[in-house]
Image (cartoon, rainbow over all chains, first blue to last red; front, top):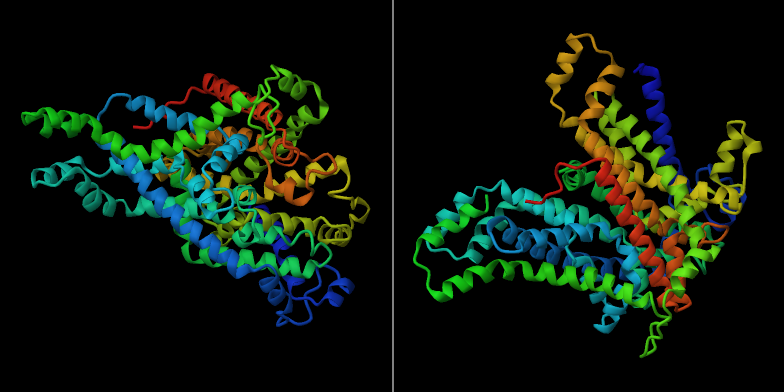
Amino acid sequence: MKNPIKYLSLVLASIVVLLPLTVVLFAAFKTHAEYNSTGPLTPPRNWFNFDNFATAWTEGRMLLGFWNTTVILVISLTGTILVGTLAAYAVSRFDFPFKRLVLGLFLVAALVPGVTTQVATYQIVKSMGLVNTPGSAIVLFLGTDIISIYIFIQFMQSIPPSLDQAAMIDGATRFTIYRRIILPLMKPAIATVAIIKGIAIYNEFYIPFLYLRSPDLSVISTALFRFKGPYGAQWETIAACTMIVILPTVVFFLLLQRFIYNGITAGATK
Amino acid sequence: MTTTMERPAAVKPASGSKIRNRSLTPWLYLAPALALLITFTYVPVGNMVAYSFTSWDGLDVTMEPVGLDNYVKVVTDERYWRVFLISGYYFAASFVQIAIALYFAVILSFSTRFRNLFKGILFFPYLLNGVAVGFVFLYLFQPDGTLDTVLRWVGLGDHTKFWLGDPDIANISLAGTSVWRFTGLSFVLFLGAIQSIPSEIYEAAEIDGAGDWHKFRHIIVPGIRRIISLSFILAISGSLSVFEIPFIMTGGANGTRTFVVQAYETAFQFRQIGLASAMAVVLLLIVLLITWFQRRLVPDEEVTLS
């Protein structure tokens, strides 16, 4: 690989990635008149014009959106981790009839794209009385996907079973072993699953859009989407709102970069 | 590895209740996961098949059976089968995505200045909220928007188009957005796989006088073959279930209606649950068929879970 070509391609790719985001950032700081009179590549005259952000924040009820997203995120993640580690514990530490069948059920489910069954799933969630309550999103995110279970099983297999046996001789019950030995040792795997699933839940649009119709239940995606209609002509406000949604991702990424890469790779390759 | 665990218990003389307990215990741990799996995956799939033979609207107490009518409609009415063709754009785009990701994963696996910065930049779009990405690109593709301005700058001003308004171009614009959004994911997966190839292999190859191309062709590609083939499977199911980008950016207008957008409208706006279910069953069959073919063509060593 010749060096100039290599760096040229990297710089070009960086421009392709960053330019669409930069112009939205520019637009977010422009006044309405300025937006109409300048081109998209012109930087804003005043970098401290936070009017659009203020409008977006209050009109879009962004605080509510962040709050709802956080509640759903925390409950679903805790649930996923408990449900997933319990299941992985059963699979990796017990031998029981129909084990292959159970594993097969999880595997085959991974082949069914979630969006295809939403029409029928909606009827079930509706019959449980969960539509238009945060519970709908929580139960749907809780359904442990194959990737989380896979990561947990992989990791659990690296914990020597002799640890379990030693504890059992000391009179520990199975559940004590899970809670006191397995769970604390699983921290890296739990962090991995929390990162992958956390990103997915923060970014999820279809489920909240379908199940959380009431404006009081807006999560970050649906709060942003609501801007489309009434603010169609006010791009500077939409731009500010988009930046508000992106900002936490930037912070999260800068703080946890290495763990995110590792988490994603662990989730898919192994 | 699992059998050894039961030994200590088996050595002790087990009372009647103990045996019962032993056979039930794993199921207690599995119960929450299995209950969720069955309630939100298998029951819906079963119901969906049942609905697909009715003209149910989602509200009626009775479901009118209509035989194969829904399926006939999905196959013969252009509005319904056309959405499968739209997936073709996204599927083709995923080849572009995999190629770009592979190229950058290879060059960033070896010493490069600002390596971590470039890695971060390339990966970052994957973390962004789908609605935000939709808005960012809606803005980019506006008439006289960013893309048009950039094209004029570099002297390609004649090539400006109605990026989202022209049915011939709209799907390409949307598929391009999808490439922008997901290349980072493929890139990181490839990067991880390439880094798991032991460095001695490269050193040995260098001693034998292998050039960059040879290293790529004979070490890297075979070393990460599995993750490449996994990427293609993900590409197929991904391109069949595209929703957010077209829904947010065009609302399915100008010939950009994908399968999920169409199914969403059929089910939740026009309340034709039966018809929407038939569409979903057809999609599911296609996905399962492709996966089956893929397994036949590239027999996968792993995929067993324990």
